[in-house]
Length: 516
Image (cartoon, rainbow, N blue to C red; front, top):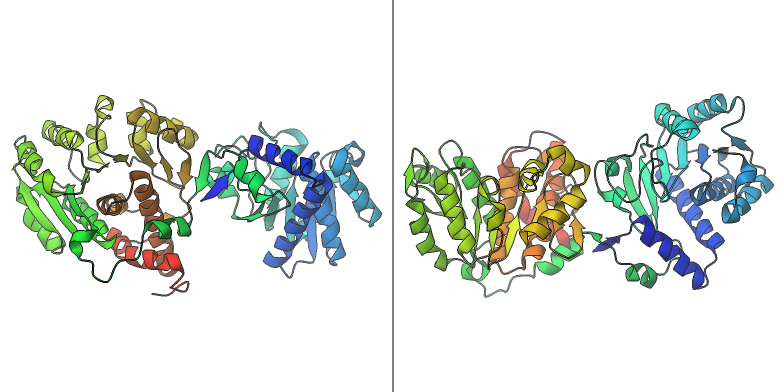
């Protein structure tokens, strides 16, 4: 997994690198070289570049990159937020080097500088944003906010140094005005703003580049956030033995469905089978059992006592007797909320089976029922998380990381907080952010497929947090795969389930991009 370092950890790593013998000016020069190289690689035809530099080391990175671009024959329009003589330390050294190579440094506070900036932006092929980096802790105002507005208004491609100016390195929340970048070159390590929405949506394509901070120095920083990688998922999903059979890959019980919501049960089962479950049995109201069979004959079914298409109180005893035959269970999709559903949920919570709670199971879940013997995974969307935490959806979205951590702590469960950049949290452990997925997946039934896939991996023997990480990654990767042909709308959830095997196969790079 890729560690994600906050501003404090990154400053500590920089200091450690300098103490180890790497001069600060070398770190800055390496950062600038990465910026210039990425800019020219992304826009090889660029001949005019506007570089806008702030007052600190991020500005120093921009000054050095401007000099390197000029050495490659690029015409550079160079602007600084304050007078160049105010630079200190390594940034001051790079200001002098820029002047020595013939570049003009235009301070934005000077008379006519705003017009000059607007004209330079209009004449440029690319903009390099080096106003503010990891040190920013408040929203921009004054000349800085006006510079950001001018960059965004120019509609020119933007590459950002470390992070788009105006973002806080440490969170996804927007502090105020911020640059909207097409590409971001992250120095040494990814930062939380690169992976947490809505800030990550302003970063464009993020590339992490080494700048001279030794890997062991970065590894010693205790990152609380990590990015899942394909190699992590591949390592969890061992190749299957030639002599294996369906009994080797888990017996899964899915408790789901009600009249009008039969599809949720079928989609969860389809997700489980496509994720590799050996045997799947759908426990549903007896009156809809034939509908589930017709939708997915590969799954077994067992009808439970029902009333008016929903589970009846007597369903609890029938389910309790059957659970001994299974390796894991999932509960919730399409069940509805009633006293009978709560009774069924309590029976599952008292079972030692690994359990996935989703949808209506979360709506019926009382906080006092969290503690249980078996491993538990909760998969709330922000609205469900808000109810479980007695909060609001707006508050959850404003601090998704904090909400995931708090819900995992309270529930003593693995929590998948769904959404853009889904988070996988477990009590007293690092948090994993999922990098896969697409707006194409914003369709009814997508969550049911995830529930089935996750439960399948649990039934196959994976530890709960590993199963959650792998299932969320594969689920998003299946969406990414389908986006290549479908675009960003029109997905059927069943298609998402059916793409799971391709996503799994592609972990090893066996399928070229865009192949079917």
